[in-house]
Length: 246
Ligand code: BGC
Image 1 (cartoon, rainbow, N blue to C red):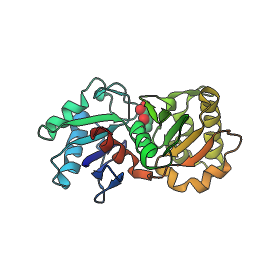
Image 2 (cartoon, protein in one colour):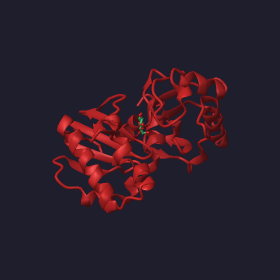
Image 3 (cartoon, rainbow, N blue to C red):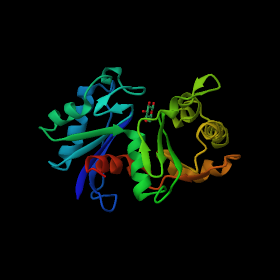
Image 4 (spheres, rainbow, N blue to C red):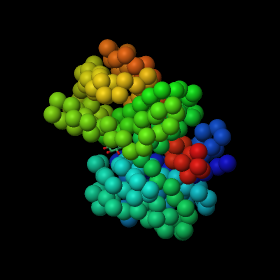
């Protein structure tokens, strides 16, 4: 079965049709830049551009970088606050001409994809996927089952929100070396480990491509740490899986 997946992020909105059996994109993804401010109407227009690019008219799944209950947006840390309270499923569905749209948190989507088709395949116990990007997203799994809408990027660390201390945006803004950033990530992982004692951390987000530059620098974490395998496609694949009932 093929379903369309769209990943709505703070900098880009990207999507592609996904083969759910294989967990792979059927065609190269199409990306448009996220409008600023990233208002509901502006983002919906971009999602429509991405979907229309493929002439798609079936079910669609979309990620959102905030808490999503049902298909209503509850928080919007890194996109326009006008999203809070919006039924994103209804808004996007209407913009796409009445198609059904399933919406879920971006890190949850990426985690679901990794647990089925990537680094978390077959893993039992507590597994935590963390996505490092503009913010820090989290997806917690117990024996393969998602606990939705965890927001571990907003844990307090040294008096700051963790994502304002250890995201890749902070690395870029402060021009931190890999060593300095890895040190911050290590402190963050130690804090999450203290709270949850997971068996496995899956490290995701665009930076997972460069895992060899920072994962070997992280010490003293008991849990196994592995980079995400689906890289930047995890959100798209997970969104499509959610819409396809996987
Ligand atoms: C949001 C999360 C999101 C993460 C990654 C955080 O600021 O609160 O919901 O998963 O950023 O985009």
